[in-house]
Image 1 (spheres, rainbow, N blue to C red):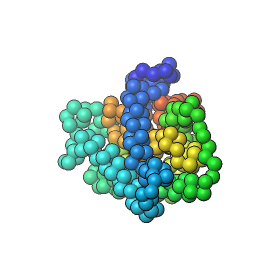
Image 2 (image 1 turned 180 degrees about the vertical axis):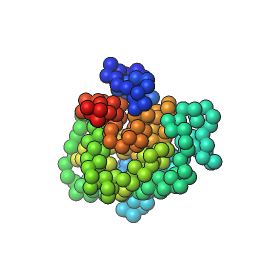
Image 3 (image 1 turned 90 degrees about the vertical axis):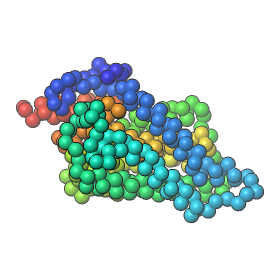
Image 4 (image 1 turned 120 degrees about the horizontal axis):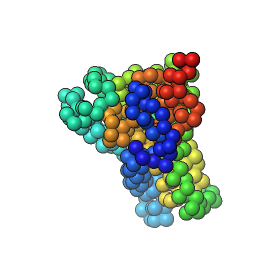
Length: 301
């Protein structure tokens, strides 16, 4: 794969071809998809319409209707975002298309019960994400109604904040993920996610609810920006980009196939457990010697 960081390389988990670190073309293209999905989510957000109609004579929406709208949109995003990938890669009968099957990291297919379990916890994750968005929306509208001064962010600041989303998410994920591998946190929280060793499409957000809360703390900086702006649409773009990125990008890290944005690096984490905590896009594992090759070298000493 080609990238600006492609000079940083290491052997993959099987000791075979060289794995390059840095964002490849697929990573960048999928981030454009997450950004566009975030803009659409912003447009459909009740926050956007409440702000747009704040000076009109038409009656405003209620907190209940806004919560219902966010929950419906989130569940629709979950189904539309995940189900087509599952149908294509695993099919109704649990079998991948012949061309795709040759590119599966683990040639065995997950048991149907794993898909069902992972699907349930993924929908729980989207429900928690919706609830967190509801809290932000109501807090922002309350601040706006009380006429607190809105912080104005420059176009350059918004552009930098938007650009920072995938990189901040990678750093946040690495360190929060490593923390979840501490013995007590792993035993009571993170072990649920690791029930899926041979990961599939629905595995990425299949987590304990407490882990969902930890995972979605990546949204905090962008939520603060949105809140301080009193709901300004331009300040909402980084938040909704980060939100959709956090909701949809786990598909690529867990679907289990080479190509299509798939991550053999993270698949190796589920098989080997104590390595590859982040992603190759930002080589924190390489720098901090927690990649599979470094961990194997430590054990051999």
